[in-house]
Image (cartoon, rainbow, N blue to C red; front, top):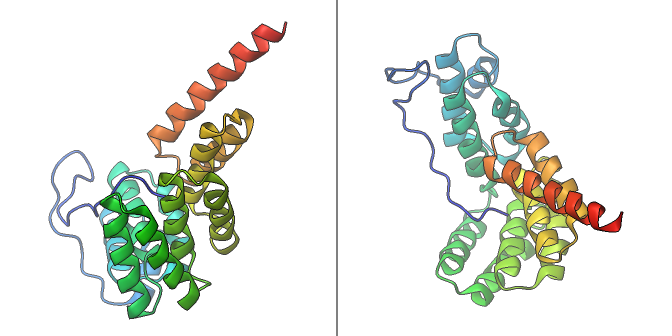
Length: 217
């Protein structure tokens, strides 16, 4: 689930407190994978940018590590890159349907969007993002049970999908099941420690639970 858009950081980014030149050139996946662990922050940034443009969903396992990078710009790039690679099914028609569904969902047309995401799932049932986008559409349509079911399908296919994990938390907040919401928000934050909104949700829920405990005393 992803209720806000993320744009890939521009090729000229702030890496050490000042604008840096365009990243070093990387031309192969092997070089990108190797440079993800490079001590030079510009090399890591270049590797993330390369995978953002060319990577597949399986590269998410590599990019997730950079969510905890020492450099905040690389962390932001890694988050955006993950959404990009997770959104590639390997099937041009499925990707087209996914994009059309996202456009409908953004315009508030949730049921038509759900129909398109269902077509994506039928074409590519192993594609986690098809399930994730339908989970989001169900959530926005107020169908929390179906959204929960689709979140479960996402996590089966992509256990590190912090969007679906935080989506679980949002649903359980709506259902006023705060202990479950807290569990999933914490899981999302463990994968992606840069989710300030999720961190704020955790603090708010912890306060709600403290107040409930006080009333029980």
